[in-house]
Length: 203
Image 1 (cartoon, rainbow, N blue to C red):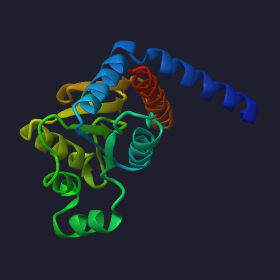
Image 2: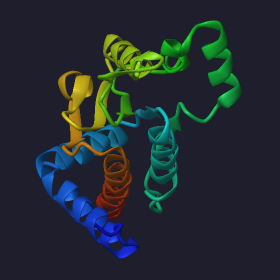
Image 3: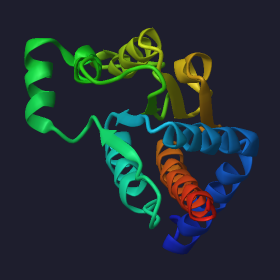
Image 4: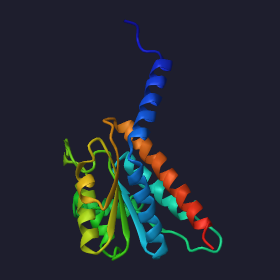
C-alpha cells in the first residue's frame, strides 16, 4: 500500500476540522458570548489561562478581547492572560509548585462578577508523566468560584472536569489535540468578532 500523499492528508485533516466545528453546540457558543458581554457591561475583569498550546490561545484571546473589541465611545474590555508574566509564573512554579501558578496570580485580583476563562484540550482530566493534567486550571477555577467569579471553559474530547465544573463550557467533541486546539482558536476569533459587533451596535 503506497504512503499517504500530502494531498490526502490535507483533505483528511480539513475534513475532520469541518466535522469538529459542526459538532460544537451552538447554544454553548451563544452562552459564552453572553457571559463575556455581561462581564464587559458590568466593567468586570476577564482572566484567561491554559497550558501548552492552550497557553498561547489564552494570550491570543486576551489580546483580541483587549484590542479587537475596541469601539469608539464605549468602555474597553479588561482582560488579562495569566500565561504572560513568565518571571512570576516560574517563581510560583519553583516555590509553590505547578498546581498554584494560576491560583496564586488570581488571588490578589479576582472578585465577584469577574470571569475566568480556562482553556484545556482534555478539560483537566487524564494523566501524563507529571501526573494528573491541568490541576493548576482546576485550582484556579475553585478559587474563582470561592471569590464569586464565574468560569467559562473551552475543552475537547469528552469535556473532562471543565465540562462539569465551569459555569459555561464549550467542548469540541473530537479526540484529536491538533483539531481541538485549532477549533478553540477559531472560536475565540468568532466570539471576539461577535462581541465587537454587539458593542459597536450600542447607542
